[in-house]
Amino acid sequence: TQLLEQSPQFLSIQEGENLTVYCNSSSVFSSLQWYRQEPGEGPVLLVTVVTGGEVKKLKRLTFQFGDARKDSSLHITAAQPGDTGLYLCAGRQEYGNKLVFGAGTILRVKS
Amino acid sequence: DSGVTQTPKHLITATGQRVTLRCSPRSGDLSVYWYQQSLDQGLQFLIQYYNGEERAKGNILERFSAQQFPDLHSELNLSSLELGDSALYFCASSVLTGGEQYFGPGTRLTVT
Image (tube, rainbow over all chains, first blue to last red; front, side, top):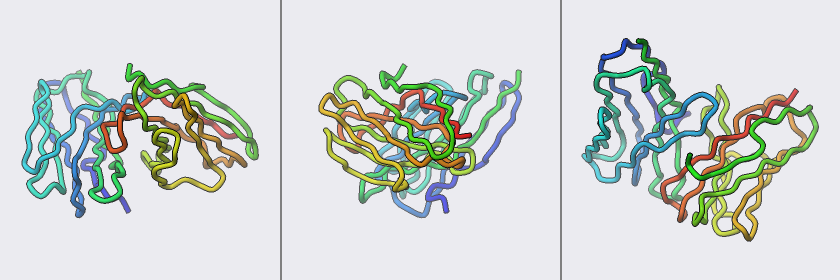
């Protein structure tokens, strides 16, 4: 059973479209991180959100942490082929300090 | 480039064998984490070391062990290898335990 559920598992869209990836849990996290991973490479940290309700923007990417710190979303505006990759959310458990990863969302942006 | 280095990049070995994966953390990072990534299990936390001492354990098999040396590099030892151990193995490092983790490029292990 995944502690963090990511949806959708796979997303194939056209260049220029918008998309949202969701990360949900019944557990509360002290912080939540989003990573992007390309084939054959390690995950690259995109952002860390810490406060419930926090919104962070990174160019065309908008990250939101739920008010209750149990869920998060990643919204990409005007997707580009370079956004293609595996997007992983990871929550830091309040007790024990471990980082728990979701199964990931595979995004493919077609030109 | 995250600053975390891992060697080797690829490793092909037979069942029953033993291998050692090596990781050098970013300069200044005291904590090292090992993860296993496979298609069916996703990214699974194995073990964490902080300044030479084991700090946390995840889903690490008894056939696997790790250590962190005084120069802070870490090694993951996998023994009595099985076909199911084929996966990508990532090392990550952070300044402190609980800090943001930066991942290395990984070692792809293939057990035949």
